[in-house]
Image (tube, rainbow, N blue to C red):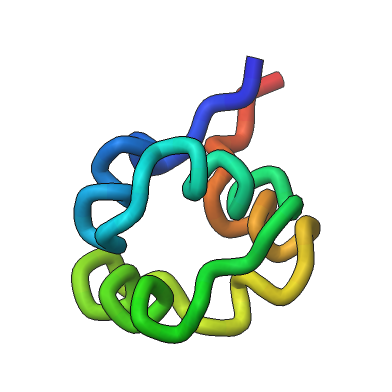
Length: 67
């Protein structure tokens, strides 16, 4: 199971979108537009370039499981 540093509902609320949009972003299906990126950067310090690739998204958002 994948565990994220933030709840999708919290990201959605700040970005002004629904939770399914955030799910699409985190799965690399879609990228957020400028305004949601700006809001997420201001509130959660999420860099703009995170959304450029699925690898960057996973690296930033996923909680690393202890071995």
